[in-house]
Image (cartoon, rainbow, N blue to C red; front, side, top):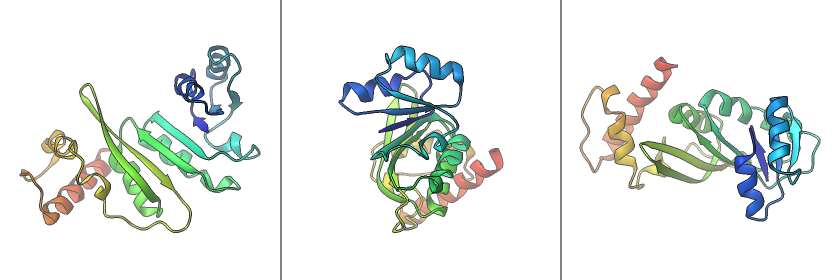
Amino acid sequence: MADIGAGSGRLSLDLIGKDHDVIATEASAKGLDELRRRTANRVIGLFGDGLLPLKHQMAVDAIVVSGMGSNLIVHILGQRHLLPYSPVFLIQPVQGILAVRRYLYENLARIHRGLLVADHTRIYASWEISFDGIGAQMPMFDEFFQDPLFPELCSREQQFRRHKLTFPLSQKEYEKTWEELGYWDTIRS
């Protein structure tokens, strides 16, 4: 597996603990030194921006991109064409869910799985995706429509909507909601 933007190696250590071989990239020399120190060189640490350090490395089955904002995740996913293989990506933005989901939609990402995760007072979206040439433009957030956290995610964004929601959402209400949220996310960034 590859841990992109690994920082000090917290996720890399978790992956090692689950018997994965890990390659980690880090754009900060100081961060890479800390990663190597914390992981006692049990991780192959590579210096560089996003996926670029993986360009001439052995293929990995999965690439984890998490703990960063939407702009950086989109930047990293945009580098996928530099890899000579098509891995599965596991992504979890800390903010900008709509911007990341819009990128997946527009770039025909194949969404294998989507999950909403509650952590204290925040809700995070995570996806398992690939860009294998057979992706489809799944309706926005269709992967979360049945998720029990979906109504909570919508209600937290209620202040940015022009209309109130009632649950369960009809398909029309669902599409209108994400259209409005998409608009809000665009003007906010």
